[in-house]
Length: 429
Image (cartoon, rainbow, N blue to C red; front, top):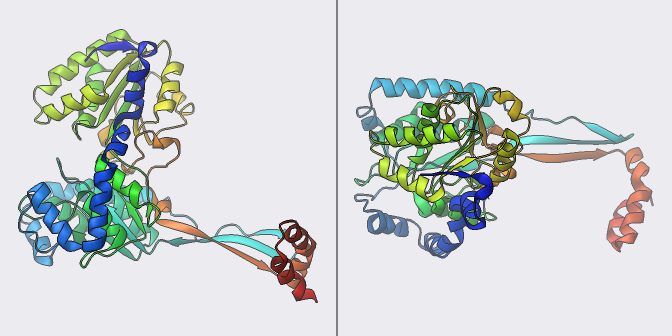
């Protein structure tokens, strides 16, 4: 770990930092395609075989979580964990209920006798992906499922990897059960995305797939996009911190470490106007690392996509942040609110010393399924609106159609579409 000036980064290093793990998608896509095609053709048997051969998962004869497994899960999880999940459910529900769109848009009268409006409908069948490789994420179930329930999705299924013994994590099962989610499948990775996209003997296909995952899961979602919709390319986690001389290096280090432990392809970036803050943050990272059992993957993630850079001004930091378009953006400056209005590209923003990235991961109620790899330039955080779509409705009276008759007939002739013209003219013949 070393401190560098942002302006001194080589073009190669700049590209590596800005592209981060998304640069690996092309190299892994051939393997992704093969697995998806195998699952699409052969269904459950491919999934079960791959889980045993590639992931060492045994006893996976039944891909769906049974009610006896749900009951057994409660004996494995302590009451404190269940209470924490309940508080998360409360806060996530409060935040996302406020996002529910009006069922009917404003009606616009473009001409006398013509009305145009939109009506919102929930997507009927949705699939939720929850990672479970190096860690378990019951929080991700709540983040994905609660908005779907609030939106009114009819069929909600969930896929998450099984443990080595062929069972889904008890905490994951309980999180789903607490909100009434019943269709749980013990499948992860590329196979889960393929199953939800095309269906198997056990796992039903859906209309849209939601949830974050590693580079392989993200590549799989992008590959099936078109056959099904996806929420966003939510891949490996990333944090970007803007700090001035007022920031606390201990907090900066802790938050960088928290993101780095997600995986070796996570990205940890600190941009600061203070050389002293950068150096002290690195010292704190080295100190705090000693007690973390996730130390190895944190060190690898910092080595691959980490950056500790000095800038001449906060405006330069903001400019780079907008180019980077981070998933998580922490602003640890004297007046963080002043910088927010200058930020155009970020998934979720955390203001001040006391708003750690982990607050949004778990308990504020904000969603933690966020665009990564620079896609915050065009994608939004997951919300209730993502679980529905608008239908457009229009109505013309006879007088209304007469008001636009000449316009339609004229443009139909320009575009050489006589049947279009006739469909209007015949009504007044």
